Length: 114
Length: 114
Image (cartoon, rainbow over all chains, first blue to last red):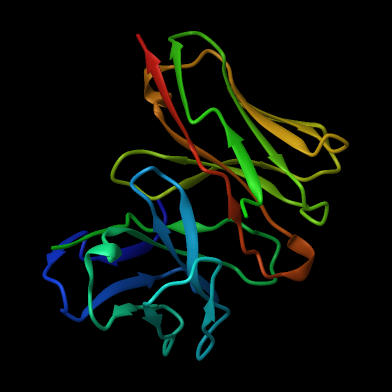
């Protein structure tokens, strides 16, 4: 069982609200990721980080922002939620530059914006 | 542009049968090909992975077949069980850069009927 946690698991929120999705890992991994998963399953990388103070945009453009102040913590923020942000958000982590390239995923946050 | 193409989108197999999921890629720089398994309400988890220097890798009932010249790889699940019912994602990555960003296929929803 991977030691990566996401809160909340489910969130229903109104349009225009600011939200932060939390992600924490206890494996000491340098690299962390955020994916957006469509209802139809497909995973899209929206943000990643190589380590503290590093953030990069992924393949899918997103209005969200991320920060990496601590190795174990990689929160995602939406300043003003819209119905188009309704999706499942998955956080993951992995070693960086080591021998293992496995990404460990959290259970996800299912976000619904009304 | 989808870096990794996956088919079929859904698959129904009788218990005891063989499940086969196929993936194709274009980027010859890819050198790591994992398969992830995702159960409802959970994040994806690594199932099995292969590097392009081998043509086949087997772990229990799960086998990856890899055809470098055709730029294709597939997952075979032997003696499929109802507990194998899940969504399966193929992926590809370029290990040598150390970046470890995974490009996922679109997913296959497998249902194994008793």
